[in-house]
Image (cartoon, rainbow, N blue to C red):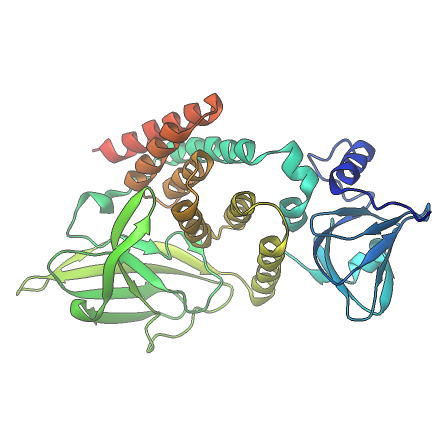
Length: 366
């Protein structure tokens, strides 16, 4: 009788029992998580047991992966390297094999490993991040004064964030009565662009728990690319009235990683989004991974999309914390209050109310 395939849950428990300190996800002994398969791909263990590979499974070192003709399997090793085994072919999963894989961004394996999700559930991870953010913001005493003056356009994106694109999309709040918007970038490749207000696409955009009257514009055609490995500062002004009085927002730091780092991050994001788990879990893991790598704008966009279709207390708590980091306390306050209203867990509700208190204090500062 052929050996029976192991179920995912039993296999994860086996690995967790073998490596009890999975909170730190040690790289010794080496393991790998399956992010996707094509066709029927199997792995044979040292005891000759056979496992059919599926997304989300974790393999320990020493198993031989077998891909038939037309089949393939994609894995991320615990040293944050990606392997692709295409058929017909075999691969012994060990450190030398993983060391030959494509480099991915740090913490990719942690974001993918099922054991990490079991031991550190989404709620706990979100609360930990919210507590850290609240402490940091209180210490820095950051205040989003732009939000207090309706004549000032508030830069929404990119804002205090790393960006992967050399020409990111621009987003800001609409100013009633604006005749022109002036964008200015200070940095290694400076530029300035004036946009007639009647030619800018401005309309209410989903911004859970409500909508936001915002303007969208591509990176100006005449503007140079953001150089890789550079830091710049972006601001936006609104010119109002016949006298064209200018109302200017703050300068906000944006930076673009080096090309190799960008490539690693893109590979990691592709693997995280491709892997299993529910859409809600994957959304949190993706957002936390993006925040870890200072891609706050990307994280905010992912959360907005998730909350528009599947609102949750965890999502609004994470969004509130992220908006605090971006210096947007009014939006953070709304998100925290929504999280508190939706929370069914006492810890979530408590942290949401604490976040709302911090956001309200920042808004109320003279």
